[in-house]
Image (cartoon, rainbow, N blue to C red; front, side, top):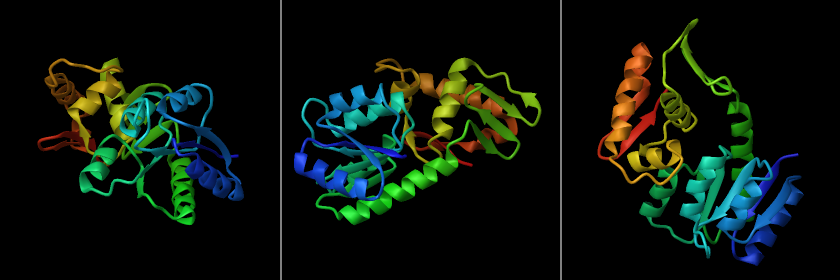
Length: 220
């Protein structure tokens, strides 16, 4: 059974979402804030996370950053904020969908279903682009039968970007996620690794696209 994690400090919203999830045959767990959610993520595997932005202790954006370090589980962001900046920031950080409050529970269920179905079809231990094969479990990258000489960090970087295909990722997000901590050094660290990664990918170097003034994204 698919399991959904609801993260919201408003009890009435959690109850409504839980009711509709259970009507749609999803198993449900709840978290009152980001800290509690991260704790649950170390103990359980979820098919989808519904995450509020405005919460005590740890807000939705900070929680989302930490979630992406733990799991590739899809996330739907809930927010009363309707400004374009908030939506763009959410997608930059790796959210899969964004729904503004007040929202229709039926619409949320439809979005959850689409995301879970899509993720289950895409979830695999390999990412294939033409002859380029990224073996996530085996942590190898090859073109045809030839294994490419990537460093462990280059593999980390490629897997992180490939799992977020077509999503523009800032240098800071890449530093924090791939290097696994808040990195306050020179963001050119990312540029140097991207340069070597492109070189090693040879004819597939164009899969890594520069997003001017921001960072990079993986396109297939």
